[in-house]
Image (cartoon, rainbow, N blue to C red; front, side, top):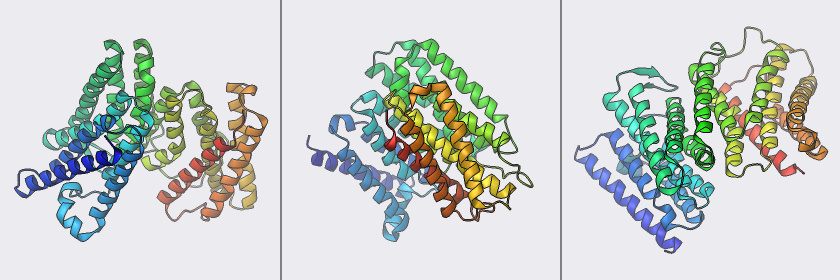
Length: 439
């Protein structure tokens, strides 16, 4: 089938789906939430056929662009909002989940590189597990808990876990030679991860994070034996339990759970060396940075996501192409975060210092400690002198750029915006470090 014909076919199916759900809604047969989830499940079912329709990612990205444009138009164009808003966005919430959906599908298709199981599992989780969690929680949810933006239920989270577990086991069984004990444990791990991420979902980001991480899990986990997989499941449980009881004054419950999941992801898709940089950041925060009068602010999940912004991408890249040098740009991203946090803490704890002194001390701390421990863990031959020096320059330039971008270091006007500026700065620094890296 030609790509153009495939695009027309998919658009036709999606249009028929939305018109059908709209007709059901106008007759009073379905409510707003059920309508939205029917569209999600229908879209996901259509997307599962992409490997049979398309051979290259280009047409899938075209479809993703059309879908994103449509979602945004429905939100902001009055006529479209009146016609289709009840199908795509009638549930009142500040979320971009519908926009992330097609982007996640296109990313999964691109990263899967033709492996059906690697593509199908993330899309199935996105389409069916998320919908099951919302619908079960709404209809039968009795045991409530406080999430980032609203109350959720244990019953809904259990539905996400169960549907993900079953879907992954079926997909792994049909499209891979993995034996059944490994299938069961892979499904358990991915189901637990998806349920925990959905539990702390923030503004629909689970629609982007879960599929991208699932691509890495599906590429890496089938290579492991069941004892290795059981070990990973136990480590996930221990990390999550530890983080939920750690530093309650500094992080809220969603941020602590998110931090535990992120550490597990780094270790699970990499190895123990991927935990060194976050541990160094944590130790430096306590031991090397000045205390803040009145104590630091209590942070939420958005801060944790920004801290892990670069790391998530490099961890998935390591699962996609192991041993390709991803650990160094990952470390540079964490080092950039460390430098920015240090300069903010020095601006608050040493307000009489010249800003250049804040910059110099923060840079020496971040580059010196992170760089030396990287060499100690990986060996002096793991990194060329050029790569180390260029990495130090990148972190220094990134830190200076952040200080210019965010003039109110000690008292930010918008802490939420500050964290996202920091996340963007760290991502750009890690990308620059990768571009300048030499063997």
